[in-house]
Image (cartoon, rainbow, N blue to C red; front, top):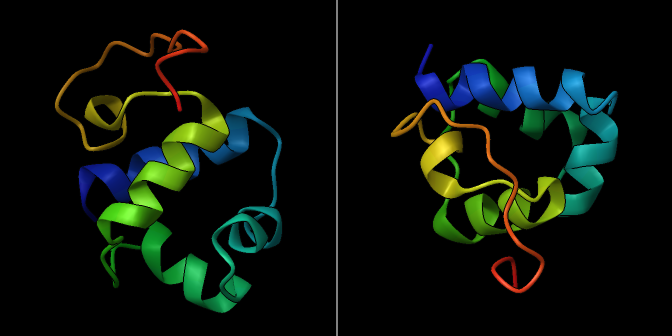
Length: 78
């Protein structure tokens, strides 16, 4: 499993969201989203951007480039 796949699940659980809720944000099915969390499919750049904005986190954190879970400033996530 890829680092971002693990992070996707970890963040979703921390925010107490279901796969269905996040799939709806991405405008995809829950089944499709589950493939991202298991590392069987790769997120595209727009999906990464959408997830980062939704959770207010950096793409660096999501992609495993940093372990710092700092929230973005409100002006940075637009």
